[in-house]
Image (cartoon, rainbow, N blue to C red; front, side, top):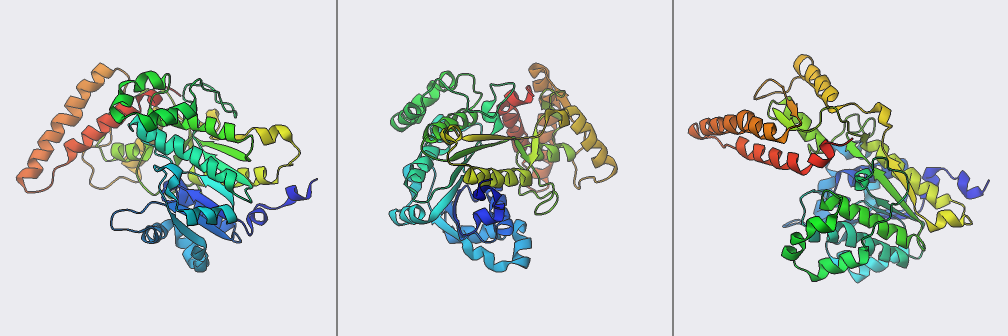
Length: 410
């Protein structure tokens, strides 16, 4: 056996400099925490960060580290945070918005890149999605080709980027659309023109997110002829199963927001197929898979030409036999919320109608959401309190329609 393949994972990462995009996101934070804790001898971790209004990148980093996610590290190895080095940049800007000094630092020192950054909104304009999810991936590849000691480039995609496939194999599926021309079109046309022909350009893809993420895989594939690339495709990322703490969750976005809304009696009707199932994967499992996949690609036998030409692709998801239907999940959640761990300040007893007919769905939205919201908001205004229930229902209705394609398919 090649000596390199016997390296432990922490040993492989020892002394290496890592560059991470998307460090302020849910997955990015978890990746940073795991690397600092389980690969303690990494030399440094560079983080691409965008300054916000009245907040520089150093302040943003401190805000990130204040998260309870890092409590364990704060207690056990408080000095490890010195390895985190924020770099000013923006993935929306061509060239990642990096200064020449910071770019040269990365070129000289970095050997592993995790490209995690993405805009996951389904309602983004085509131009914005192309710039963030597609052009930034190209710019990461261009940067990677300049690195003097590159070992692995990891691109985080999504199993739902292949939403047009019933079965998703661990390969990159070709697309008829050329990613280079797509970037050129986005750079030369204005938003209005792009939105006019967006639906025709997307083809079978339901939204700009899945379209640009799938096209970004083509970028990685093309550059993998000269770069050691890995594509990780997590499914729906759920709260942690073990690390850093059971059930750790940063926010209430995605399916968790829906579950909370149902539990508090806010979401009383939802448009979807109750017998379809979703594929969830705990965030700590995703992070471990990314770290292990990087190690595997890094120690791979360099003489294996076929695997050097093509990127390694990993679908990070659970077996379909373990999936529960949405109706079963709703019934389980309802039982727990009613008898074991009920929410505080609920509006109605948790009871959500799952309906597949869009006409009847709209009628029930009017009866169960809109009319009660108008009544409750009116009472709140009378007593001098802020009213926002109708606004929440408007968001729920909009999101429900945006994700309808996924809700009627396994």
